[in-house]
Amino acid sequence: MEIEKTRETSWKIQLKKKNESIELTSVEISGEVRIIKLTLLKNGESIIVEMAKEEFFNFLSLITAFKDVVIGEDQIILTESLISNDIETQKHVDEENNDYLKLQAEQTEENIGNKESEELNPEEWDPW
Image (cartoon, rainbow, N blue to C red; front, side):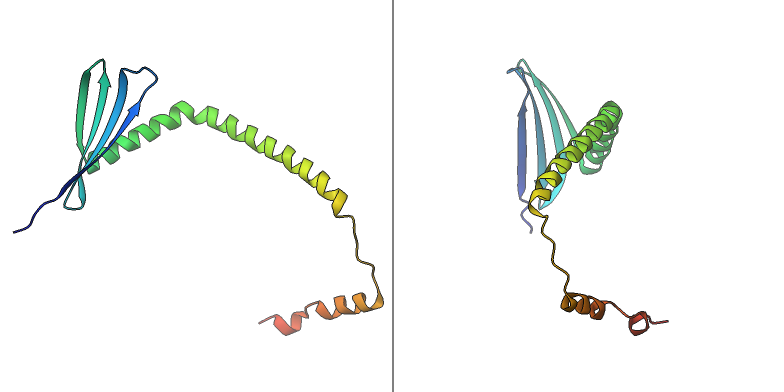
């Protein structure tokens, strides 16, 4: 005989109006999510929709597709704005760094000799 353990996890999301909220509940039986409940609450009245795990994933796909339709164009504009702001910030940082990075090593015969010895010979590493 096996004992089935049931565990419920609920999130209650308060909307702007105090008398409106959304509640998401996951019902886990013996370690496996079996039921997902979506509850809409308004003025003391509620609508509860129960879904199996697969139905919830289908619902989630529809919500994601709807988000892409609604937000898609605005998202592109927002992204372009963030990129242009990032480029301006990078230019500013580069200009500041230029003040500190103007030091150059003096070339001496010793440095030039080291450079030549550090270069790779294609015959040494080329497998063909």
